[in-house]
Image (cartoon, rainbow, N blue to C red; front, side, top):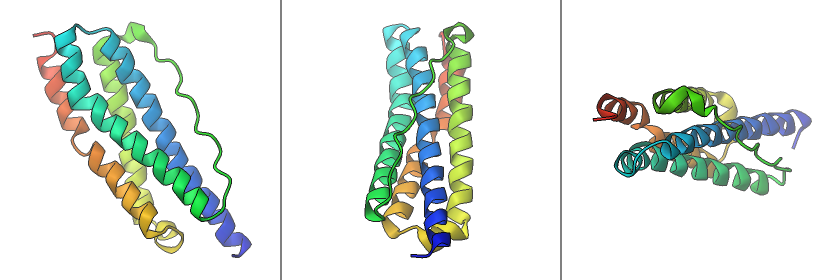
Length: 152
C-alpha cells in the first residue's frame, strides 16, 4: 500500500472515529436529559431518541474498530464524552443532542459521497456507515414530536 493510501485510510478512520465520538456526546446529553425526567417522559425519551442514537453509536464503534483491524491500522481509543451542562434543562439537552446528531449525519453524507470512501473504504465500512445513518434517520423528527408534547 502506498503512503498516500495509508494516509487516506487514516483520514477515513479518523472521520469514522470522530462521528462515533460525536454520537457519544449526543448520548451523554440524552442521558442527562433522561435523569431530569419523570418515569413516563424518560421512557418516551429513551424509546424515541436514546435507543436510536445508542444503536448508531454502537454501529459506528464496530465499523471503526473493524475497519482498523481489517487494514491492520492502530485504532486510537474513542474519546470519552464531556459531561453535559445540566442547567440547560431537558429541552436544551435534547436540542443539543439533536444538533450533534445532525452534524454527524451531515459528515456521514459527505463521507459517503466522497471518493475516499469509494476508493479506500470497503463494503463492510460502507454498510456500517449506512446502518449508522439509518439508525439516525428519524431522530430529528422524533425529537420535535417529543419536545412538542414534553411536559404534557
